Image (cartoon, rainbow, N blue to C red; front, side, top):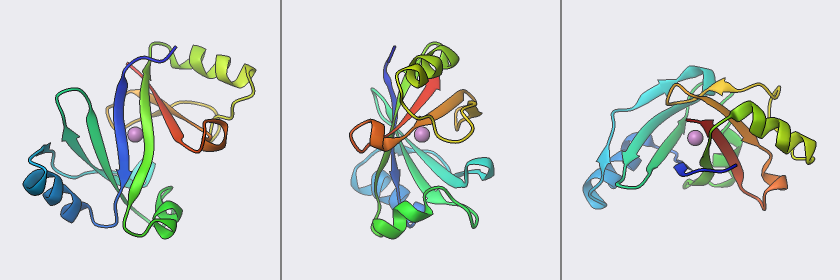
Length: 134
Ligand code: CO
């Protein structure tokens, strides 16, 4: 069911500083900040040869990463995104096996314009999983 790692997401308290660190200290190619109000985050993409890193900063009052940053004030790895071919088939298989899909269970449009779902971290060894249909 799982395909490639699409991206690894890191929540950061200061997106401009984090992007500068990836660009200037680590020597990576980084995108301009992209606000995603429907997801409550602003994103910078770090382009790597084999995958991407997403740097996430809270946007708005009800950001889903606000509580994470309260617990991890200097930032931390927030989720890993795996590609799937058919997100509805993946969801149905997961829910049939007892895994919990976050939200209302319907895919949302993610940062790359593709349908995404998130799986409860307690069902997968303490790691929030995003599935993205490619
Ligand atoms: Co993501």
